[in-house]
Length: 553
Image (cartoon, rainbow, N blue to C red; front, side, top):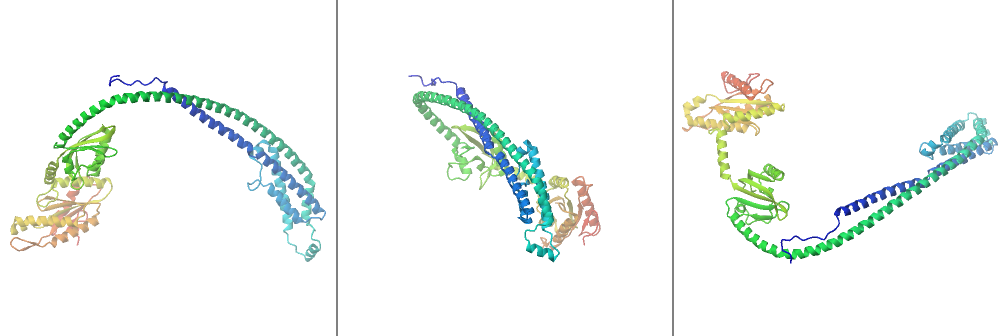
């Protein structure tokens, strides 16, 4: 018996390239057969279409109609027919000669091959149209004398003189015209016969080509079938040999399977007791190969799920898209901070790999809980950007964000307006009621201003009792209305000091709208500050704009 490590030897067969070449040959022959068959059917169809017979019938019909017109003309001259009969017959002949597409017409092939015949028909049509017009004009003329009317009643076959002249002209020319039409019939018949013979010879040649191509296709198909039979026999022999080898390998597989199961159980125990989150799931089906107990608890699941897709773990859609794009493009992601879970998401530092498990692509994910770290980071960020007393943006944070917002408005051609707000006689509040009351006034003022602004507006405390607000997409008129609303809200605040005394105060507001010369937020704030200075200098409790410097009321 051969050793288990020996590789099975497949029976020797011919190169698969031979079968591919035979298959390509059969396909090429099939395509050639299709082309030859289409080519032959096209010729047969052209031969079956009765273009020449139509032309022959058409010219014969014209000859017969002209003969009838000639006969009617002679009868009219002999007072055996009426002028109206001649007019009707001329209309029939004209309709037969119609080449506008409504009636029979000479085929394009015949017109190109026999231009003299086609030109003769066109000339005849012109002559018939002339005869019909002369006869119809005379017939439509109304009689003016009662004697003419009486004569027509007594002799209904009496023809008008104009109709008689038309009949004489027809009689004079009809013999020559009929002779030319008889010659045209003979010419068209000869031409049609020649065209038919030529088409039949071409069709015979194409049938010969089609027979050769079909024979080649039959030969190629026979060779391909023989090759397939040979390959089938070789495959059957290889299958028997592989079945024997497979039985020999089953014992080795069973022993290795037991070892792998023992190793997998040990690895599962190690990962399940690990302080990190671990997940192994298939990409397509979402089948979970492994998920440790720690990650199951963090996801709020009562037990390990049977299916779980990696994108479903990530809470934020943008982060999910960036995470999966990186993983699909590079096959790995390292230390990406993201929130996992849906009901109570927690921050984690995630790493992932795209690996092969049992012949299928799978996602291997592991991560560490960094929720405490992110909470401390958020607190530090809040402390660095917020004013501790009012809760508004501090001066540095306001300048950074207002600069970005101002640049955005200027880049898109949108207006924006800055409000500089200062509490009037704030020192008097501190001196009379204490610094605690001054802090209360600052917080109340910050709340009132914030309620009067939109969510898109930016508000910050620049220091002391001075506030600044940036209103994007706001013109000077709309910003003035907001400023007046803020000033009125502050004037109506009803505060009470620790000693029980009512405390009221007002504010002054300087306003500046962005212009072309404002290249940054600092010049705009300077203009608003100058307007605030004038508002305080002119009596306080008012809104002044930088341009007009006029009170709002």
